[in-house]
Every structure is written in C-alpha cells, then in structure tokens.
Length: 576
Image (cartoon, helix red, strand yellow):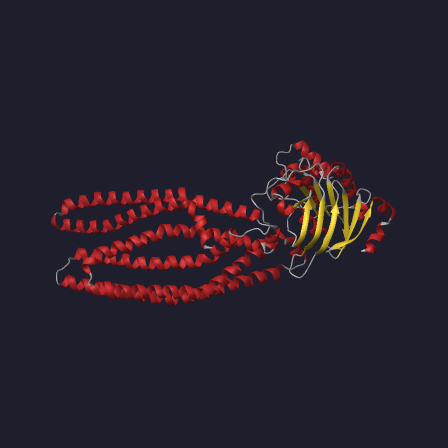
C-alpha cells in the first residue's frame, strides 16, 4: 500500500519540493520579523519620532512581502500540485475501474465503492496538501525557535524538560489515535453503507414506493447515522480527555520557561522587549507541538478512507493479459469451442460443469434451458467478461486467454436483456450511437428502424433529443431494450465483428415486435457466428441452424435444422 502511495505522489515531487522550500523561507521571515520588532522597540526608546516612521514603513513592507509570498505560494501549489494531483488521481482511478473485470465489479456494492472513492480521493488530496503546507513550516518554526532560545535556557531544559515534555505529549497523541482507530474504522464502514443505501434507494425509488417501504428505508438510513454519531461521539470523548492531558504538558513547559525568564529579568540579564519576544517564541514552539498533534490526528482520520481508496486504485483484474500477445489474425468466419469448461460465481456452486461444445464458423445456434442452467454464463466466457475456472474457451481456434483482450471484445457484439449503455445526460441520439460515436444521423435512424423503435422516438416531444435518463429510466422496459438493440446494431458495421451474442435481448417485447426485429436483423448476421439464448424458441426456431438444450451446466441434447422442423416446440420444454 505504501508503494501505491509513493507511485501516486511521485509525479508531484518537484511541486512539493518547491513549495516546501518557499515555506522555509516564509517561516524564516516570520521568525526574523519577530526579532525585528524587538529592535524597533529598542530604537523607539531612543528616538520616538523617527522610530514611528521607520516602524510604519518596515511593517507595511513586511506585511506586503508576506502577503505576496502567501499568494504566490498558494497559486503555485494549486497550479503544480493541488488541481493536477486531484485530476490525475480521479482519472487514474476511473481508468482502473474500467480495466477491472466483471467479477470485481459484481463482488461489492457500486454505491459503497463510489463512496469509498469519493471520500478517499478527497482525503488523499486534503492530507497531501496539509502535509506540504503545515509540516515543514512547523518544523522550521520549532527549529528556529529553539535556535533563538538557546542562549536563554539552561542545560536542564535541553536534557530533561524538553525531551520529557515532547515524549509525554507525543505518547498521549499516539495513545489517543490508537484508541480512536476502532471507532473510526467502524464509522467509515457505515459511511460506505450510507452511500450504498442512498444510491440504491434512488435507483429503485419506484419499487420502494410501490411496496410502501419508504418508512422502513428511512429507519434503516436513520440507524446508519445513529451508528455514525455514536462512533463519532466515542472518538470525541477520547480526544477530549487526551486533549486535556496534552494541554497540561504544554502549560507545564511554558510555565517552566516563563519562570526561568522572569528570574533572568530580575537579574537584568534581559529586558522587557526581549521577554515579550521570548514569550512569542515559546508560543510558536508550543504551537508547533499542537500542530504536529493536529496533523497526526488528521492523518489518522484520513487514513481509513485513503486506505480504501488505495485498495481500489491498486486492485488488479483477474483477467490476465500478457503484453507480448500479438494481434490474432481474424478469419472471414469464426468458430467457437468449449473444452471441459467449468465455472461458478461462488465457491462450491458450479454453473457450468465440464461443458464440451463446438459451434462451427458462421453457424446460427439457439440455446434453450431452464433459468440458471448456464446459458448466459456461456456467453460471458466468449467475450471474456469472466474466465473459465477449468477448461478452455476457443475463439477462431485460439484460446481466449491468448487473444489481446480489446481485440477479442471488438470481434464480439452482445445484445442482452439488461444491456445497453444509458447515461443520465445523454440524448437518445447519442445513446444509440454510443458504440460508434462517428455514426451519422441517418445511420442512427436506420438502426432504430431495424430495432422497431424509430416511430416511438419520433412520437416523443423532443424526438431523438429526448434524454433517456440514468439507466434508461425515462423509457419503458420494452423501449429500453429496443434502444439497446439499435445501439448494438450500429456496431455491426465494423468489419471485425464476427460473433453476435443474443442473450434474451427481446425478453420484454411482445411476440409480434420480437418477430419483426428478428426478421429485420437476421439478414445483417449473414456470415457471422450467432449464439442466441432464449426462453421463446418459437421466435427463432425457423432462423437457427441448430438448437442446443442445456441442463445443469452441460449440454442435454442438440437438434439440427431438420430435427427442429420435425419436433414440436413444446417437446423441448418437456425434454429439459
């Protein structure tokens, strides 16, 4: 995890170094300005009239210099570190999410992960900025203060008082954060639950209302925040007690120094102006201790979300791809083969069981079987959303693991029952041409007509400029499915598309519309290898070359075109 942290911060080393150097210069000016005030006070006692003018000019110039330096440092940090780092981290983690396999995405709540990324990204940027802006100034302040105090404190201070005060102070800080860790981890876990529940309830709002479960969801959400409040208060209670202890240490340190300097004032070894300056230095020294404790606390507070963010940014896909893989020569037609394939989404629950099957190049095959028998899973292994846990899947005579992943995905087009890409701000025009953004308006209309959705789009007030909404929520289930089909049809114009996977893509449509769509798209599939999963075989039985019936993760039987014509549709259901 530390290596991942170093990797993320390494592009900004020069920006951090430049900012740190300027902070050291600024702190030197601040501390030096305090001593300049002592000189002005002494000069005022000798020549009051002249000293007022000098003091005014020096103070104005000093303030302007510090202000200019602050503004320049702020702009430089924002220009070279803050915003570039936030942009890079955001883009990197977004790219990482797109590169991770389907298994990773299915293994957790999208809402919770979105919350972890948002919290982690924010805390990462804030903490990095705090370290640069505060740690070095605090170190500079402490060392400069100690350097200037060296002539006004004795050996007891250096050998006993200061080491003991620092040791007790930092031990209290460590113990405070150690005792808070358990509550903090639980609190951030509940923050993830907050994101998950709120996002999922918004996405499924209609069904929550239909089942009249608003009060229960509100109660669940209230319980989450009661837990957050409880854990937060437990942390605050610990911080209060340990804060009192740290205040006592700092007060004791300052009391020792003041007693020492008051004694020196009584013996005329320093004057009143120097006493004021020394007190200011002691305030800066003690303030630096509080600053370290504050930064430590903020790092401890931020570490949990940062840890979750780093876990996501360093995640790796289970779909291994060797960089040495060369592009696979793509034949005019592509065959599919499954050899002893075994697969399950969960340990001990196999979905595919030693499946052996070959689909010849250019063949159209329909798959039937009861729900859960592995039909859709089979398709996910072809375009490698998942890898077979045992056995091999071959596309065009090559194991899918030996294909460059993006080339394999370009070869395949999938139309599924829950498919399609719908963004909240995208129009229907842009939604349909998502897979081929360069498609012309006439090409979009042609795809929509083939999917039997053009007339319904034109009946809408804004036509193709209508927004589909997040997940297509502004459309009915049948409309959403047909828009997704149109989206996929546009991608078929790519000459590399050799395999078409139809996964119950018309399940929400009536039989007449379904038949019309298949009649429209089937001529486009000539020469392509087609695998069609369906529960209504009557829609495609006259179109496919073969029917494969599956049962319990393996092939139950196969029927060629002649056998399909000779066998009634009802007998398929009885057989499996």
